[in-house]
Image (tube, rainbow, N blue to C red; front, top):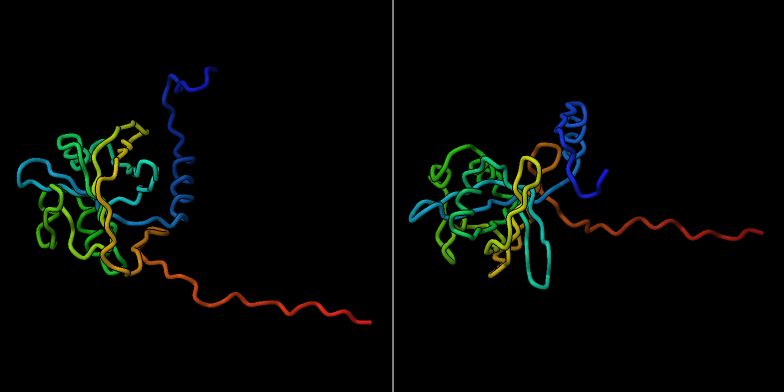
Length: 186
């Protein structure tokens, strides 16, 4: 077997896929809406939980989108994307942008254009990136982005996805219980 080469035939192990989904459901992930312009006055967006920082020097992020994603098509067309990191109060926004459909996702959402990209109002953090590379990854495409702007706008807790539901993360403010120091008897 040659290392680095994909197997010649694609095999699907349904049991493995099911178990993999169950394991990944145990991982809490941030929820963001990736946005791009599909054309003049045609915004596109999709809810993602597969997004992370990649590099500090230079600042880079990566996001994974389904091969069939309209937002991926828009990113390819315009060469840039926005990441709207959602807050705990924005589960409705996440659900709206998770639905199938194009610019209709923006109907009823408060948003504007920032650096040529759709930006969702009230998102506690925002990143604007230009596409550095596109990498195939199974049924998804990994979009590598070079960050050109980053901004924190609010300190609300993040919206996270865990065990197939939305929630949030709050820091543990309670100090850990300390066990009493052992004593010597005797």
